[in-house]
Length: 414
Image 1 (cartoon, rainbow, N blue to C red):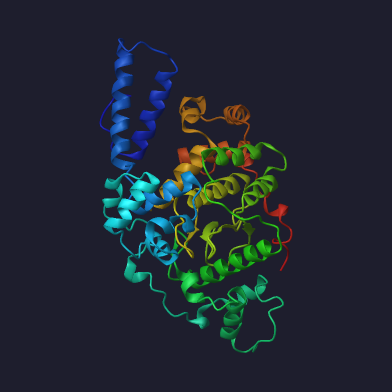
Image 2: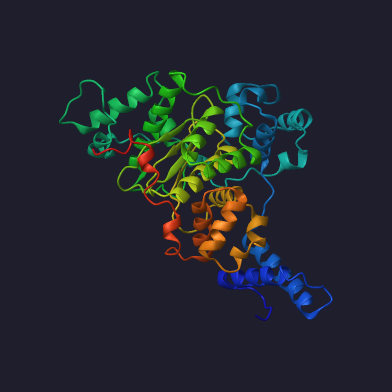
């Protein structure tokens, strides 16, 4: 191919493939092919700058990064911001940073003042005026579907002919201490699965997952959570378990071992939900998985995607990312970042770029890369399908119908 300005995704993929072909030849930069390789690399780099920009974090993201890096909790920010309520409001973007706060954060946490002075963005979040919880219309909940999934088991006496009472009773069970259900359930509800038609079903599912996670914590099944655990090393430990025959169960145990409940709860009709990351009132992250797509590759990508949200995007109690991870790229910044982190953790970018599989995909090459990385072949096959856009290829390697059967308590005949 002749080098030219890259204007489409197909041209971008072709240029990258050509770079890979030339790179493995170990050619001299003084040759014609060497000059061609250098020009192609510059064209690809320019395309990536235009289409995959890396922006500096806004002040809240900078604070959250430092918290994760140093293993700090919200309570650790009180000396710098003044009170627990102020910490919550600042992290939720409801209170601007004052000069004194900036000075204290810069001195105490070593965050450059110029980052803290930058305007606070609204990337991935609703404008402040939209964060005020609206009253819940209890009649809009899919009560029949909730009942089919066991939401009302042991809920006590209700008026059977008034479905709204069932929904109210359910939420009072989830929030028994008088927490405002509408505030927690709606706050920070974002993600590809959120639509006007799916909102009430998602609110019900979110409350169900929170309830099950809290119950497991109360039963002592989940240890206390301390921020800072979910880093690149931890993600690689999780992915490494995929090589084990019992890797899915072991991965869940590993994540829960650092205090993050992983709740498997099937989706409600009409939501097309794959997974979610939720921050509970006490600061504990919760991961919910629906296993809607019963495939091994989809399980690992979804789990890593939600862990990325835990690490990068959850900030205030009630925050939640409700993800519909179809075989297409998102357009939201937070989802793009979570996708990138998940991809790179599953198959490191450098390994992918230098592998023969990036040039031409075959079953043998997929198995070879999986063996070299010691990860499940389904992960590599899933990456190939996403990269090539051919979602009919290598279906026999994806581990179809191998995940739901591991959770018989959830996926039984209702």
